[in-house]
Length: 277
Image 1: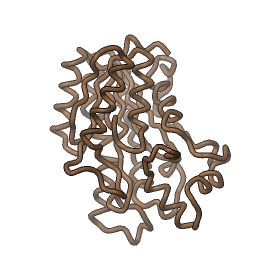
Image 2: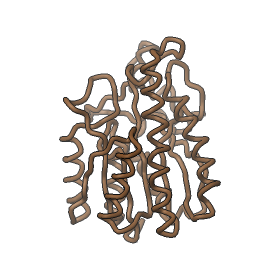
Image 3: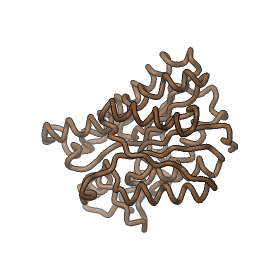
């Protein structure tokens, strides 16, 4: 795809399991001008929860994407749970790029601290954490980007959702509930922002198989462990295509939704789940 006319903000560019990184790489290869951003954890990442990235991971993604783009690609820190921080990020992105044509929010969190598990057993603090990272962050980014996209004559907002937001998944915890709300929010935003030429869609992956990358996917690993099997076997049993998906297979859908090839696609939640019903 030729995205050389597009200026795009990618939030969640460095977090596990790598969907943001894969998206940034794809957009850079297609010629888009980019600003990358992510939350940065102090003291490094926990072993079981995803959410913020490390400062090192964000810098590595920026270097990798800059090399592909052939020009420096800014990588900014943001607290996606804070309205002021998100507003500052969007202002900075416009300052770097001059405009915005697309905004990809690929932020989220899974793990015990983000409310994984049986719903009646989730700790209230983890419940709130899961809602904040998987729902509120999407709203804050969309809210901040909408006026800027309107000023550019329209554009595309792509939000990360989940297969668990489309189909009830037991023991998945808060993430499915939060992402179901993201799906509904996206449909409402598509109606509210459509007259301004702004399209709003989600991607709904079932789960990225870390394979040999060493990037854990705690939500999937929990579901596989519950059945007493390894993650690869669980993915093969669950997904009709018989395997897990790569981060790039999710990023390919994001790239399409950002592009003019999706110029009449709005209010859609796209399952990227290998045929799982």
